Length: 183
Image 1 (cartoon, one colour):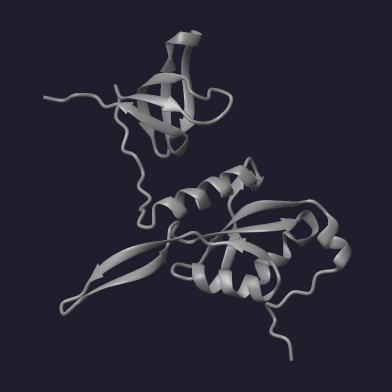
Image 2: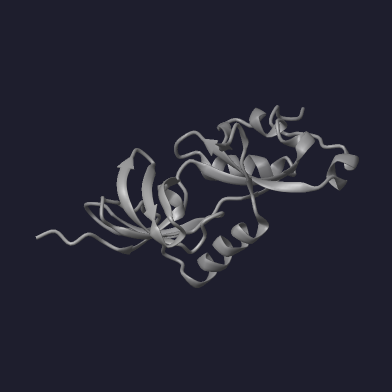
């Protein structure tokens, strides 16, 4: 008897254009979800990194997901909602009210980076008013601005080169260029 998370896809569906999406999983279920998705014939990517863990009696190198509680799936529009029936999948990551599509180039960039660097960690940058940052997303890509304020996951920037007074941008789309010096 087939397991409930094994999904049967029509071959016509496989001809439809597929996009990458990020799905949010239960904590510590990333590799389990990736395995179940693979069993179901769903293309997925769970980037991993090597981490050395210290126990009281030994050190051990283990493989951990790079992005905690996230797995990437490549599915057609019609298959998108069937992924949610896989145990451990909580939801898609949304942007502007719909599941956020991820470019193939971004998936490739993560994979290529991990081929060159086997031990990596993901850290959020801490921003303060006065820090200078570079925007990494459209429409303001590569513009530098000064952080005026930080509100939750967004930074309010002043981009004087364009004559823009204030712009609210997600912190994950910013790269720290120069930090405010405090004495």
